[in-house]
Length: 121
Length: 111
Image 1 (cartoon, one colour):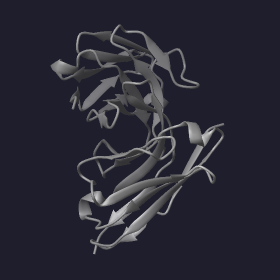
Image 2: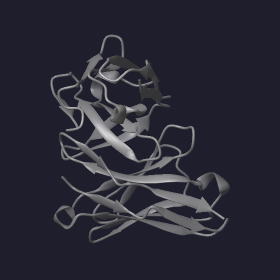
Image 3: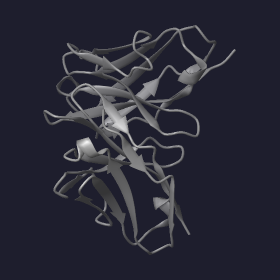
Image 4: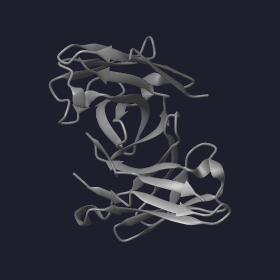
């Protein structure tokens, strides 16, 4: 069965960096676009970043553009999110999600359990 | 980018039915949406994708109690025979080639 397992969350000071990882199994990882989505405390879901199957295209939400970098290793079935210059407003549960793209839009058909990132001094 | 609007809260009695609504901004009336369920302490789960014409495709293992429909700019999620485990947050989601966007979510309380 499809499994997505995030890791790497923790408590970090503002301005510092953190790297999240997502280990995928149960499907052919290299044939799916992958996303990071976050949920801030008491609030809704926010799409963060997308990477296409071969890693050739990457897209980001305006709120993280220039600070976060999404990457993948199809040989290891892993998805990463490098988060730099972290801010208090980046505090959230971060989920990796498998994307389905029909040529027009992406939606998410499987999600991980999430990893908690807290940005605080 | 499209804007998705959801009521913040909804409630219904155990065993009853409830309709949750997701409204697309008018210029995006042709867009499909996906409905996701978020239970406490769990990752989100895809319930279904609802197209402009009301046809819908469910996620893996989603029971028949969950159904979807459309009208104009509105996309609906209907849950019948409500169970206690249906108490959760429900988010609609759409997007484009290079982005995703979520509605604010509806917190469903099962009375």
